[in-house]
Image (cartoon, rainbow, N blue to C red; front, top):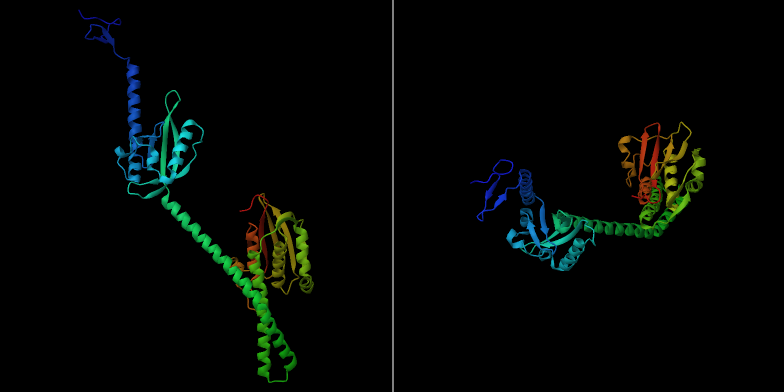
Length: 399
């Protein structure tokens, strides 16, 4: 006679020994099915994701690898499974790879992104960025490690090429600066002799020769003077980069006072009125900071309007990470279209007959600001005036 379950529903069957076995409850079957489905989904995701992945056991042996990694390294999955992962690492890094993996699995070393060189099956070498995560069981114990591999070979090659190019450019710039300095320095003595003798000719023979000769002598004297000034300005420009910065804490008001003292005759002659707000303590190269103030004040004096007394106002604003200085004047102003051009070396907006100079002063200002980790720019309107602004980072905030 067939056995009936206690609840009246047939839920067991006789085994060969004659004993009944209970079928798993519906909720248990449902959970197992969900786990199988989850595992199947994970396997499909792991295998199909476009990022190279592998999973290692506690001995560092590959127990799972996806298609993307096989394609990256040129192996079939069966050729990688069961082998220690350092078999696929460049020989010079295999021992380090093995030791690092042991420390990660034991918890001695944090799982931080790092780079490792891998070998393709064809012998090619790849630079790989590695990101690890531990694999744990239901009880929370570590059972292995899962790794995502990102091929950064091309990125690394481009970075190295860029770094090499930057080094060559830096050496080239340094060589050019030394050449400019040496050439300018060595040119001064023969040019001083030329200038002296042409001025002597002008003094001794002016009016004694014909008008054409006097004009030629005048041209020679003027050319020698302009060449001397150009050499002086070139030396100043080259020194900005060639001379090592001597950064010290300084009172910017005192440095401004030194710049004004250097320009005392020009300020008195132009009738300029210079005023300043309270200025801060800054960390700068004192000599270069004085030069910066001096060139900006000299620029304002040179490009003043004839019909209005020149007024120059210097101020500074605390922006948090840096000090923003302003040198404001009521001069002839600058067309905004030329606001970047004026900081380029030898760039002039006016003829030498209108305003003398070599077009180097503002280029020197830009160099000084940039060497201190800041920047410089101008806000201006023709006929109204200009405001030159530059920034000086506070200690610890240099770019």
